[in-house]
Image 1 (tube, rainbow, N blue to C red):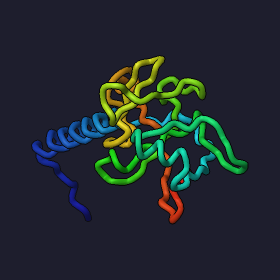
Image 2: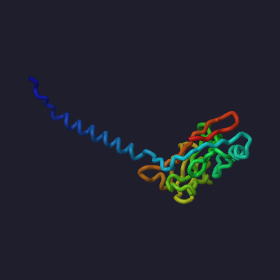
Image 3: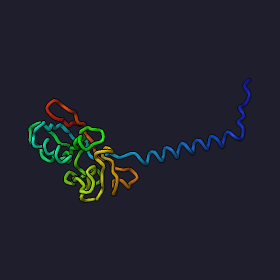
Image 4: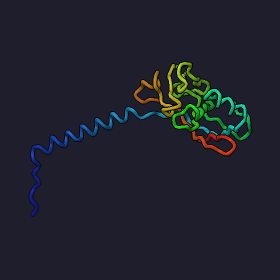
Length: 168
């Protein structure tokens, strides 16, 4: 015959404490997860070395692409923002969707900030995003202050022998 299990009085408060601490950690982590609000749209775009776009990217550090110029190319939801490896700490080219992730409208596009070469700003809501160091994370404005920060949609950039290819 089995004997009943007797729990000491100290076990119950310890278990409750662990449950409370675990729940607190989960709740605080959940609050910091960035929401991806920009719809997933096709992206397939190449910037060839020595093209006007490549020269402008090297000179200015970032460029915006809002028109499809070649058949079988796609530029995402609101266009592409391409950031040159010359201004990124990782020394890699980066690409994002141009649409503001807080406004979520194809025609509301972020623009380079005049006061910081690593950031872009939404002209409508005023949100500021770090596109060179923090993978499009919001650093100011309503996109950063909500319970679920809205990060810019980032696309893959593949270095090729004749330029860079941007895909999702």
